[in-house]
Image 1 (cartoon, helix red, strand yellow):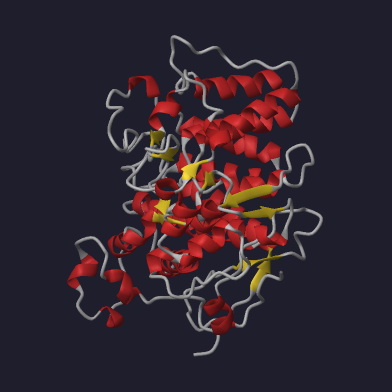
Image 2 (tube, rainbow, N blue to C red):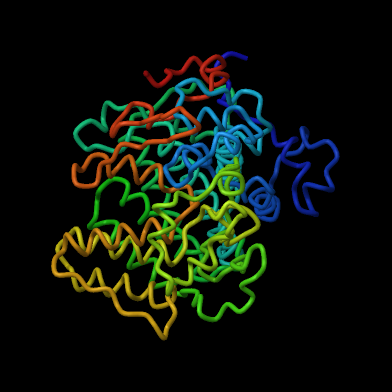
Length: 452
């Protein structure tokens, strides 16, 4: 069928991985339409919702280095393509859990099914708590995937060009035959903001468990969104709102099991909702953490011990997972860093350092921690951005940070990768910072490819 939704895989597929209950009991799902709040709640708890995007950008970022032998050990050829910033990358033949585009739009489709069915269910005094939570959850997950997609496959937000720059397809209906096209970057971000504000309104105050999002998580994702629009006033407001509902910071001084392979696999209360990278990069286990980055961690910084494992070659790999794979969701730590950055950029040096130190006192040895100070907003900002990189390592955010920093001459940098006798480079604002849309999507939907 021409112009079907990008990668819609029918609900039949998802049922294979659902929790026990309604979906498991129905044998001929194609003939079944979810009709109750319990049905819809189960749909939002299929395994696909634990996956998040941005693995391709993580692979492409400057946080890793490789010897020629390590580079050749990478299992997938497309990993090597991303590492050396090739324009042509083959994402066509990956299973769904390893294809970011498919992952995003399957989740979006489920959310659209849920939202459509909710419109036919009457909200009552007895069901309003569940109704509102399901409504907010569907909006949250849909907007999160829209944000992942625009971060990877579109230019960085620029208010001067956002109304003409190509965004992503904004799929808001569950009709798989609907003709789709790319919205503008402006339209994409406005849809994300609209969804998240509604989600924040309807979601509960407290999490049911680490797999369920609440108000603090919606405001955190709004804060991340506004930060990536350079809207520091709104990003600050949303960070404050998130901390109002979710302010727990994990004290790394209290972690005693430091010798394990993953000492931070805590199901930490810092996490707003579980999320792991859909295409886990091989970089953290095969490649080595960039030496210049590793050397930024002081000996009194507990992350130096908890995040890294020293290998036989004397260099380090990453082991600081918050979950059983690379964690990509929002946390209290990220929100505090956004708050600190925004305050510094808005001229509030003391407020910026206060937010930063609220986090860092829990990251450094308490007996050796000296609160960060700065003589100017510019110096404070440099410190905050350095701590942001150290705290949010492997979260799938570095690539988008590079895109935004490249627009500021004081932070722009040329990426250089030396592998064997070959040297590869990527200049600031190079078009290859926008990743190519998988070719099967172009072939199937006739939407416009990014230009190189």
